[in-house]
Image (cartoon, rainbow, N blue to C red):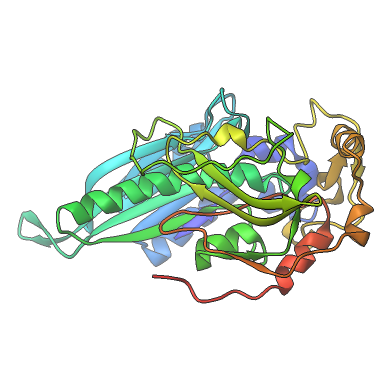
Length: 369
């Protein structure tokens, strides 16, 4: 079972996002009661929660869940945020092999300047025989996260996802090195819907894309598109950054003709810079709404959350590009991106909903084993 339970602090800080909701469900005590009733009714072996407010976890959720027979792990978001993720498992069903809490914030890397977190558990299914718990079946990796909300920052979400996938890959490989199998459960609020590229990447392992304007990937050294060869894969401590490798082949006429971004360790993610998109409102107070929303209103995302900042539009115009480019650009034939062996991938932000439309029309092929 997995739920985003809506931290009350976030609700009260952004009331305009919930004007469509019945007033009674905006009260935390109501939601808490409904959640605990749901857990008691279905008795899930594993429970993953997002937007868990720290004081609510310690004062209300953990005491009750513990009495229900759950062992719980909580990780608060870094920075000043008061919420985080919680992963709970039934003690009668699992023994704990390892716990890893991940922080996505890296002050030295622009793409990782957000305070989201993740929890990755390695559990051993057990069966109780008398007073002893005996191992039963392969181990189980349970990952739980809440990725960045911003609907225009797929680049940040990709970087956060890379950190978690690298830790998952490490655990799976450590089990296989011992000759053991390891199953995987991936839960969380990914702030993505089935039609979005991030979701497609996770569920299919690959992503088709049309030809992309090269200026959408803004590099530190703008004069050249670098070709960075990935180093031999080396696993590092989860406290380090899981980096990206970019390979650009044959850029001409302002378009990327072949592009591949692979997620590897120790290969400079800072080469991938921010693509134009929504930033913190406190830093960019002047904005223009998108002429077509990226997210449907049924998700509770209001029009005021979908806009381009003046700062970003000026950057685009300064480089000789504007939104009209999308109406006249020639897009290349579909290219296939085979993003991972575990985690080779590609993600980008969309400067116009037209590119999203092109992406959705592209066909996917079968996942490679």
